[in-house]
Length: 353
Image (cartoon, rainbow, N blue to C red):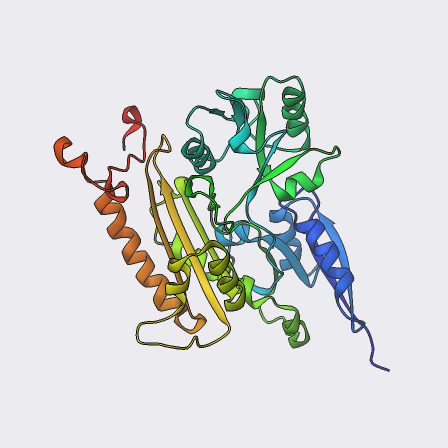
C-alpha cells in the first residue's frame, strides 16, 4: 500500500481575499495519496517568511499579492481554479433599479467610474466618506450594512470573498462581465483578482502536485500580469483587465443566443471555414473617464498557442487607442467624432496630471 504524503500549507488567517476558505476546500479534494494540513499564519508577509524558514511545504497567497511580492527564494508551484473576479453590489435593488440620485459606497476608482457610466445620477462615495474607514473588514462592512438598513445609503460594493465571510445574510447583485447586457452595465474587473497561488521554496520537487494545477488560471494570471506590466502605474487604478480561457462550444451558444456576429467573427480566422481547436482565450481591457461618460475598450479572442504574441499586439493597440482618445480635438470636430474617438478625460479637470 502506498504511503500517504503529508504536506503543510501555510495561509493567512486574517486575509480578506478568500485564500483560507479556498485552500481549506482544496485540501479536502486532493486524493488519498496526499494529506494537506492547513496551518494558519498572521498575514501574507508572515506566510512567506515561515515558508522560507521551512515551517511549511507550500504557502497560499492571492494573485494580487504574489504579483507585487514575487521573491527569488520561492516559486509559483500551483494555481487553484480561479474564483469569479467580479465584485458584488449589496443592495435591495440591482444597479439599474436603485432609486434616482441614490448613494452607493465603492472604494475602487474603476468601479466608481463604471457605476457612473451606468447611472450618472447616482452619488458614489468612498468608505472613508461614509464611515471614516478605509479598510473594508467585517467590522467596517457591518457599519455599512447599518447605514443601508437605515436607508442612509442604497448599497455598497465589496468582493465576493468578503461577502462570503460576513456573519449576516444580505442580497447581492453581480457586477458582471460575460452577460451580453447593455455595454454600460458591464464591469470588467481590475486584473489579477480571484487567483489563489500556492508557492514553494525554490528546488521543492513534487511532480505529483502538477496534476492539480489549473492551467486555465495560470494562463489568465500570466496574461493579465503581462498586460498590466505595460500600463502606466498612474492610470492602473482606472483600468479593467480580464483574461479567460473559454470553450468554443460555450462561446458559440452565447453568439447564437445574443445574435452576435462580432463573437462569431472573433473565432474564425480570415479564409478559414472550420473552427480549429476547442479552446479560445478572451482578453478584455477598458479604461473609463473620471465621469463615466467615455470608455476606451479592446476585446480580442485568440488561440492559446497565439497567447503571447496576441497580448503583445493588444498592448500596442491599447497604447494607440489611449493616444488617440486623449488627444484634444478642436471643438467643432469633436462633435462629429464617434463615441470611441471622443476625448477621454482620465482625471477631473482640477486634477489633470
